[in-house]
Length: 394
Image (cartoon, rainbow, N blue to C red; front, side, top):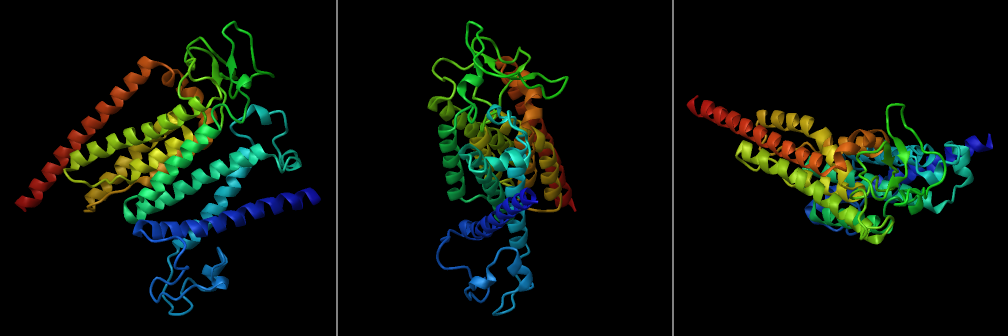
């Protein structure tokens, strides 16, 4: 009974912490696009500007106690305030459950323990676990703020983009691949001497083994998939001598590659879509969102996320244009794809390994991706031209 009560207490505290953070994220979503301070003035009603009392600013509860209205003037509050607080609290709980307790990324350093709450709670104050949780919670917060800013303002404030990029780079420097595992658990010496310990993990019968990688052989050939770290994969493999495993240089290269991959791949989508519709219908928000995600995850996951999300994103954009909207947005699809790749890389990674560590295949992917976008842009341009001709003749 004590163990059950302790588990419930921990999860409840994480949920309350997340909902409180969600309340702050609501302030960021409203004020940052307007260029306002996050500190002054204090939270107030948007209509009568009456300061909100502390007892009326309790996350989740205050919205329902006030029935969604200002106590002073009765102006309605957006339901978004409640949903963001609820979503952030749920994200904190889910991150802790899947990444810390269940160890879905199969960090070697935690794989020796039973993946249940009893084993984890016995090591409640393990600094590595809380560092991983904090990094993932920061990513969730940036995704929430960025997606909602795009949803409401069709852009992400430069302050959010800059801060998200800097935080991603700092994390990549502080925790280079394969952290939290030791560098010796990630590579095999050139003479074939294994430097890792324990049996390799095998996610599925059809999948490659998860274990140490050779230091002098192509990573796309073998049956072994790189171990995951806080940043799922390093910038390349096998790593050159000037990017040793676990080094600051490797962390910096991984973070920069993620930022560039997110910005350039989504920037190409934006440019060709706007060329196709002959107007600046798609802003920079989605590009900045993918750049932030790349800074936190590296270039391989963000490219896979874009490939997963680009089709439903384009369908959504076309539907919005058909409805007569001057500006389109599909950030929610990109965010959903990033979350899928973030939590599912243990299963997704082995499927793309033979592509992402092979220069020729990677070049074919880039060329094919660009050609597909160009063809789509040309078709979109013809449709736009025909629609304008029909509207002008009528």
